Amino acid sequence: MFSTLKILWSSLKMALQELRVNKLRTSLSLLGITIGIFCIIAVLTVTDSMESNIRSDLKSLGTNVIYLQKWPWDGDGEWWKYINRPQPKYSEMKQIKDKVATSDAVTFVFSSGNQKIEYGIDYMEGAEMLAVTMDLEKMQSVDIAVGRYFSPAELLQGANVIVLGANIWEGLFLTPEAAIGKVMRFANRNCKVVGLLKKKGESLMGGVINDNTIILPYLFARTIVDERRYAEPFYMVRARPDVTVGQLKDDLTGAMRAIHRLKPTEENDFALNEITTAQDELESIFGNINLGGWIIAIFALIVGGFGIANIMFVTVKERTNIIGLKKAIGARPSIILLEFLLEAILLCMIGGAMGLLFVYAGTLIAGNFFSSFQIALSSGNIILGLTISGIVGIIAGFIPAFSASRLDPVVAIRSN
Image (cartoon, rainbow, N blue to C red; front, top):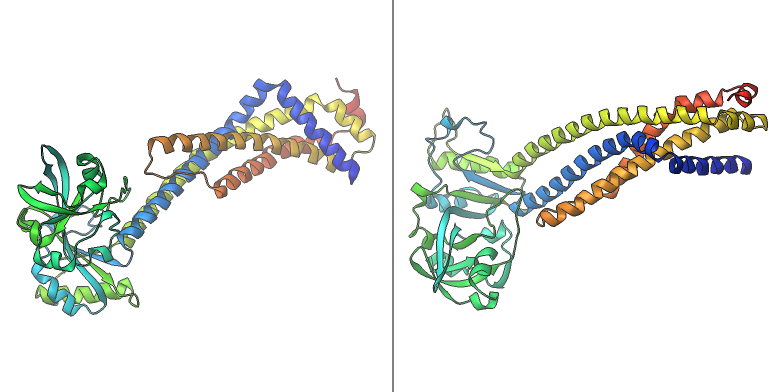
């Protein structure tokens, strides 16, 4: 056993020495493996990171929330089916709350972009107004940095109060504390700042609230924008903890059909959208991206495998005399086979490690350019990359190693 390990150790040292002596030949042979591993792990790293970020965004949007809207999220471009549907109305809120017992929170929301907000001689354009009623904070992350959110009385009375997104208050005030309590001009109306939102950064899924958002009570907002003509209002309805989203959807369907007085033969004139619909579509997209990465990588690995096989055949040819001597002093064919197989695996592992190193460098560069998008090389992908490298090494190195193990020692010693 000890002599076997000694032979294998000397073979590994010899393999490393060959790498140092024949740098160009080795580098060209490893290029295919490096590219293949880079393609696979880079694609998996990006898709895994995107999926992680999107799942986090989806969670913040509410996985137990139904979005009652005019337009379905999976309408397949058939807009003519939905263009004449009625918009959800604020006046329907009480009926929805009364008829849908499986919900514990209902809020009516609409947004309007390209708004102007002023403070003194300073102003910002392109802000997004978000009009809300009660219970928004139960379904969305309303992270207050300084100040507070609206009180129930302010929402019910339509008070002239606002909560500013991070980009708004950072652009108009030196410090967040300086913004609280200030009276600003929004759409030519005076309004008081009661709260400031924490920085959210860019989101892959968007969301109801972002850093350019100005939140205000619905009854105040409707004096600025008529949502029935200039916006796309919608309801957000949250399921009770003991109720599934499917049950809530069924109850909400029945309630809305009754509210709209639809006959049994008539189709729904509303859409009930849920986060799982978007999630299923995204998983399909990620699957296709991964498949494309694997196809590219397989071709690169095939080329790399031939390169490794070629270098191993050359190595066997160069060491034929040494192989003959080893067999003459008692080395078994299995030892010779294992010796060259380990060398092929080592070569592929080095190529794979180089590919992983390039992926890691790419994640560091991407992190500097996309601070809001968290991308990281996971330990699982590192293990996968090295495993694939090892498998390619076994496949590519087996035939050269087998041919070396079958050499006749007398003939091998006498070869030039």
